[in-house]
Image (cartoon, rainbow, N blue to C red; front, side):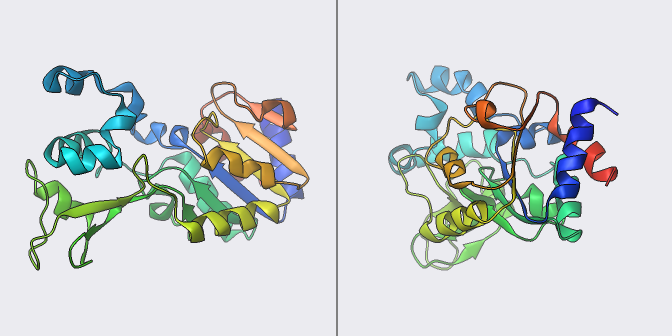
Length: 246
């Protein structure tokens, strides 16, 4: 066993209240890419120089709903994606009574698909959608099946939008508070699959005052200098091996 993995196993054994804070890197092993890497085709088509952040902004959703949904369906919804080793390992840690919460920036629902229950989705979920007119709720298939058009509510005719936090929109206050409370009371915080550049979510880690801080990410993060353990490797492989060794 690699020395870093062995140290992670020791930390997990010593922990009673672990919180996992994760980002896009957690789901890349499930075949879900970081959406920031693929927007050139849309700029060419639209004749605009737009960043992916602009393409999934509240303003763009309101002004160009059809183009918004084309990008959204193609780049943000992956209905065939399955949980990977990290998702499965975290769900196992929760069943063991060691993991108290998952705080995720992802919108794919894969933590719940793996069996985790206490998941705080900072940016919402593509699995939930609602009508702006009457509030009726719809699943991801409803939005996908409406392609190439803007999904409309059959009850009132209103636009159905994903229950995700778009750029320019505020995070849900209750989810924020629950996430902070979990981090504040944790004895171990594992930061995984995120370089901590997306705010305000990335700022939540400052509330951690527990015993063990672990970072598992392929690239450098702002928390590396404070971490007890930093591992630069695929997170699915690392978490699977460590949890299986408990």
